[in-house]
Every structure is written in structure tokens, then in C-alpha cells.
Length: 267
Image (tube, rainbow, N blue to C red; front, side):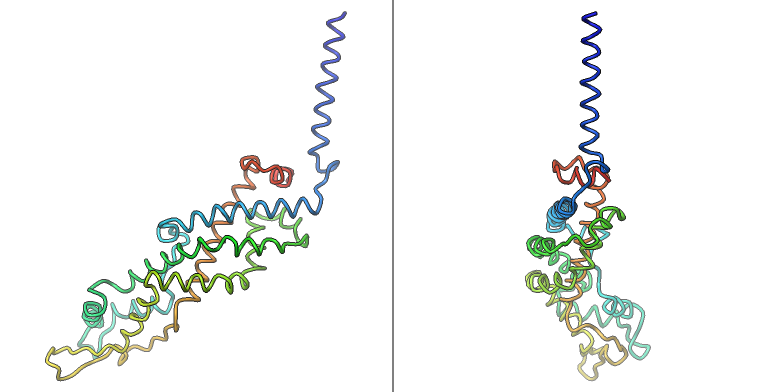
């Protein structure tokens, strides 16, 4: 009889504990508050940003990631293609003119390939300065649309953050990218690329007559690559943040954050 009473009491305790646990985590009895949702979203974005910036700022963070690797601007790619396919007067291939030009101006190294590398190295260098800029933007998140973000798609928080902060982030981040592009030589390489259009090439080698790519090419190139590289660098960071958000939504209990567990785990 005594054992039966003990067993009965044990059942009551276990069931009682289970009910308390369910009540604590049941959205219907213990709903998320506005402040909790905002805190959880900010915490998730902060984790995503920190991991993304660390990844992007590492050596090869952009260059070796085919998804966020910064390629040539469309106008520059057009120039590159025309160099390989067109000629001056149907006689002098532009590829020959280009080879002569890079031998003089760039030690025989391809300007386009070096420009891609330098832009990506610049983005990697600038990315290390992005965290406080992005972090400040997160502080301004309000409850507006917060629940919709929480219940939205797998990158809803990242997408909302990107749509509401991109302009301000561009303005703040652009000087860092420009400085980095100067340091990696990307801006100088771009200047040399543009200057190719006006290169005076002597096909005879005797100095009697010269031809120039500008005689046959009507390519309008951007004045600089600063804005282009900044936009692509930010886009790359947002992509990485979105990938981190997916991970958090998939397993909110893997991050050691009670607020993320509470907010995303209840979803």
C-alpha cells in the first residue's frame, strides 16, 4: 500500500512538472511580448552579422566564395569581350593592341583578372569595419512588422533589414571600401583599364602611324568602381547574414541564447 501511494505521488509530480513546462512555453498561455520579439530578432541579426563579417573579412572571404565574389561591372565586361572579338579597320585585332598595352602598363599581367582580385581583396578588407555600422542600424528596429518578420520566410529578418537600411549603410560604408580599393590597387588598375581606350598603338613599330581602341570602341565606362564595389560588398554581406538566419531558424537551440530559443523556438 505504501509503495502504491509513493507511485501515485510520483505520477502527480511528473504530470505536474510537465504541465508547468508546457505552460511556460505554450504560446497561447505565455505569448511572446513585443519587446521579446524585437530582442530576439536583434539578437539573431547580431549573431548573423558577426559570423558573416568574420567570414567575409577572412582571406578569400569574397574571392573564393563564388556566390558573393565581386565580378567586373557590366560595362567593363563588355569592353573585355570586345577586346577579344573586334579589330581596328579589320586589320589590327584589339587583343594584339591590348597585349601591347598591358606589357607596357602592367608588366604583361591581365588588367581584368587583377582588377577582380583587387576588388575582392578590397571588399574583404573593408568588411572588417562593417560590424559597428551594421550594428547601429539594428538598434533602430521597431515592433512594426516584427511579428510578420518572425513568421515570415527563412530570411525575412535579413530581407527587412536590407530593405530599410541599405541606403544608410551604403553612405557609411562607401569611404571604407574606397580606402580599401586604393590600398589593394583596384582603383589604379581600373584607371589603367579605362586608359586603354586612348592608347596609341603603332602596328608598324616604326612610328609612322598609330591607331587607338577609341577609334572603334564606343564603350561608356563608369568614372570609378567605388560605388559598384560598395554595393556588391554590402550585397555579399547580406547574403551571408541571410544564410546565418536560416541556420538560426532551423535550430534555435544551437546558439546558447535564451531569447533566440524563446522567440524562434516557439515558432
